Image (tube, rainbow, N blue to C red):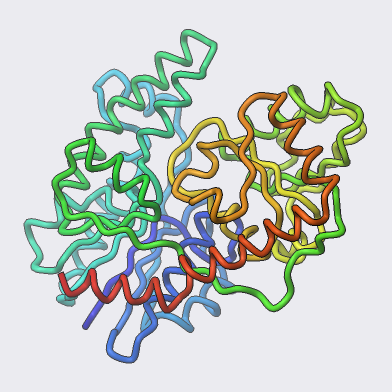
Length: 388
C-alpha cells in the first residue's frame, strides 16, 4: 500500500503536544508492506530544518516540504471576518499549496492521511480529482476550542471576533470532514462530539501510541509542575489560574514549576515566590520524572491532552479538571479531578501528604497507558481502519 502523509507543521523537533502526537503516529505507520511519503508544511512557528530532515528521513521514503506563510495579517483577518470566511483555515488554502498537493497526488497514492484539520483544508477541492482514499486525523474538534474561548472572553469586541471565528470554523470544519472518506480521532469523546455535529463520514477512534520508558517518576517529589507551550491560550489560562486562584492565595502550597516553550510571554510580575518559571526544558521526560505532581487546570479546548498522556506514561501523579481529562478514564488512570479552588487545595494537600496515594496512582497510570495506548494496540486499529 502506498501512503502519503500530509502534516500542517513540522513534527520534529518535538516542541509541543501536537508534534509528539504526530511523531508517535508516524512511527505507527512503519510497516514492511507500506510505502510512506511525507508532505510537510514548513511555517514560521515550525520551520523545517536539517535536524528535521535527518530525523524524518528515517520514517519516509521521501519528504516534500513547502514553505507556508501562516503569520496573522490584521487586514486579511478583518477581510475574512467581513466576508464570513474562516481566516485560520484560509491560511492553509493557498493556490501554491493546492498546486503542490495536486502534483504530488498524481503519483497515485492508495491513501492520503491529513494529520489535522488544517492539513486537510484543501481536501474538498482535491477529492474530486483523485481516486485516493482521504483520511483526516483530527487532533480535536477545532471549532470547540474557539467556542469556549469566545464564551469565556470578557472583552465584548474580542468576544464578537472569537464568536465569528468559531461560527465560520464550525461550518467549514463540517464541510472538510464530510468530504473525507474516514476521520480518525484521538479520543472517544471527540468521536461522540463529531457524531452529534451531524458528521456523516465514518469515524474511527485511534489513540495516540505511547511507549513506556524504562525510568519512571520519582514519587518522593512533592513539588507541583505545569508543562505546556505558552503560545496556546488554554495553557496560558491554566497557568494564570494556578497563579491567581491557588498559589497567590495559599502560602502553604508546595513549590510550583512552570515549564514550556514561549514562557517569556508570561507576565510573572504578580507571581508569588513559590512559583518558578523555567521555560522550555531540553528533555521533557527527564523533567517530568523529577518535577513531582502535574497540575493542569484546563478550562477550555478540545481533544485529548497529550502532555497528560506523556505524564501518565511516566507514572507521574496528576491532577486536572474534567475537561483536562476528556477522553481518558480518569479513575482507571489514577487521575485526581478538581474544579473549584477549594477542590484543588484539597487534592494537592491529599496527594502531597500521601506517598501511598502517589504510588497507587502511579501504578494505575502505567497500567492504563500499557493497556490503552501501546503501539501494538494502536497499530491494530490502524490496520482495521485501512481495511474498512
